Each structure stands twice: as C-alpha cells, then as structure tokens.
Length: 420
Image (cartoon, rainbow, N blue to C red; front, side, top):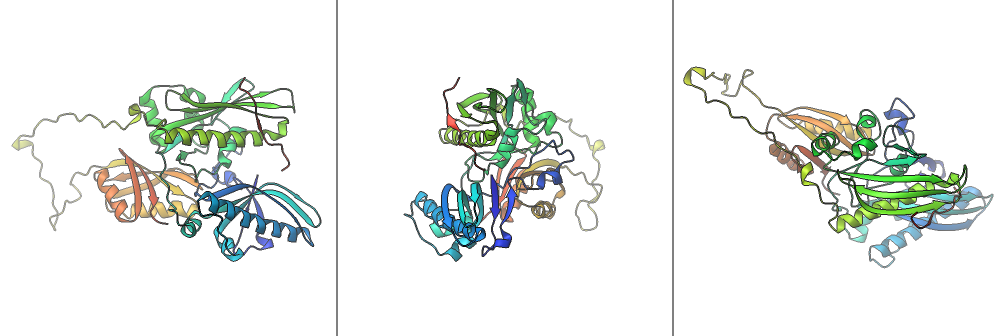
C-alpha cells in the first residue's frame, strides 16, 4: 500500500510515492533488520475502497482526474457517515482538506487510470465543516506487543516481522484505543517478547509499562500456516489483553498466494482493532488493579532533638539557599511527536516550567508517541496543574502523565475461513 502526499493545490510534481514508514526506519535504528517506526497517528478521517476508472489524453491527466474523483467520492461517503447526507464542496476546498491519498491498487495505461484508492481528510478541517468535534475520547495508553508465530517460532520485537510491519502501517489515530507502539529498538528486543506476555507477575509488568508510559497491555497474536511454498497461507488471529493474556477475540483468514501475505495481515490488524474497540465500549478493557501505581511505603523517621536540628541557609532574600534540601520526583510523560521538531519543542516546553530540573526523551517515536523522563522538584500534582495552565490536556496515573495539546498492487483480498 502506498500513500501519496498532496500539496495545495494538487500538482503533478508533488505526487510522490511514500511508503507507510518512509525512510524513517534507518534514521532511528542502527540495524536495518530491527525496528519499524509506526505510521502517522494524527487521527485523520480515512475513507477507503474508492474505485475509479478514468480516461484522459495522457496517463498523468488520467491519474490526476482519478484522484479528483476519489476526493469527491470520499467526501460524499464521509459526510454520509457523519450523518450530514452527502454534502458537496468545491475541488479547491477539498484540496485544502485532503492530507493524503492511499493507493490500495492502481493500473496505469497510456490514457487510462483504474485504481482503488483511499482518502485521508484532516480531522480538524473536516470536523469544523461537518460540525463535529475533532477530539475523541480514547482509552488509557495501551502498550502493544505484536507476536507472530511462523514455522513454530514465536517472535515479538526481537527482530522485524511481517506482523510488526502490518501494525506499523496501520493508522491508529481514528481508533478509540490509544496504542503505544514500540519501534523495536533499544531495550524493546529484550523486554517485549513472548516470554514477557506470558508472565503474570504484576510487579515486573508495572516496571515495563512505566518505561513506555502505558497503563495496560495488548497482545495481538497471529499464527501463520503455509500449505506449501508460494501457496495458500492461513492466519489464526488472536486479540489478547492484560497480564493474564485473556483472549478478547479469535478468527481465521486465508489468502491463496504467498505474495498476498501483507493483505492478509493488514486485514487481520483492522479486525483486531475493531475487536479491541468493541471490547472497550463494552467495558472489556478495564485496567487491572494490580497494574496501578503503588506508592512506596514511607518509613518512620525518629523525631529530632533540639541538638539534632540543622539550620537551613535562607540566603539574602529569605529564600532557601544552595544548602537547602530539595526533593526531586522522576515523572514519566508520554507525548505525541508527529515530527522531529515537535520532540525538541516538547522538551523545551517542559524545561521552561519552574521546578523542572531535566526533561529527557527516553523512547523516541517520530509520527507516534514518545516517552520523556522529567525530574521535578515538587509534587507531581503541581506539575500537572502547570501543564494544564500552559494549554496541555493531561491525564495521569500516579507519576505517569499522558499530555496532548488542547484545541483544534493487484493482490487478492483475504477471505474468511472457519477456524481450524
């Protein structure tokens, strides 16, 4: 699947093919065989499965006309989905609203363009026209560990897998589930394995979740069975949740050719996401109380006698001097970082808050959710209030904060087969 990014207005020279992960993987990892950066999770409205068949004087003109038609059809479908009855807009307005074209399948001739396309609409701009809120209530941050079983070997994030690739391609911004998708770099290969998903101990799970700024865990699993080399592939998919590895949903999909494996896995990701969203609406993704933050037990200290009292240097102005004791609390902050510049901007914004001694990015995910470690000289509740006063939307669980800025290719489709 290919994403075409569009300028405003659309120009032929700007219609560049971008893969779902782009060239970003090699910028984030040292080993090209390890690590996959997630796709954009900005939350654009997506309309898929739009068929176009256009003839024109040239191939470029036919493609241009096909994309124009896809935009119109996509807007009609989106407005009907939102209950607005197929509103119509000019091509210029649509150009400013469309953030990308997803090429699911295309065939280009000398003067004909036949394709199945998807259209991505800016959530803020489309929502303002349709009269719906651009904000959506989402779940608590969920650490996502894709497990692939192929040839009898189960692989988590130890190395790149086709299943991990499928999850990196999936745009999760419009989902009700707040997926925390590790890239597979650094300590991910050691922490996020099949063994960890089968370990029920809550204490170690709390340590792992704290590293990624998450409060719960999801384990989407696929078991691949190949009939013969190059032949049909059967995938048994499981949507699992929590440290007890509870099964939320299970289903089987099949494709007739080995080169259709990405189609099989993409369809599996979509159905698993649907299952998780349904479970969230039904209360099936409630957090495990054993994963909640446990405050350290305060040990009693002996009362000081008058001879034990140490005077505190108040300095010239009556403020605590360098010798005054300070307490620093480490706080984990999870923030959306759609670009490299947003990472530096978030660090600078945090360091500008009085009382913050340091703000360091510990887990980088360009286009996804990064995790920062902040050292703060006061109660975490004070930091939360300071962030909210500066325009951030903050949800907290103990010393873990989730912050957001307030405001506005010819392959066969997979088919269902009975679980075997």
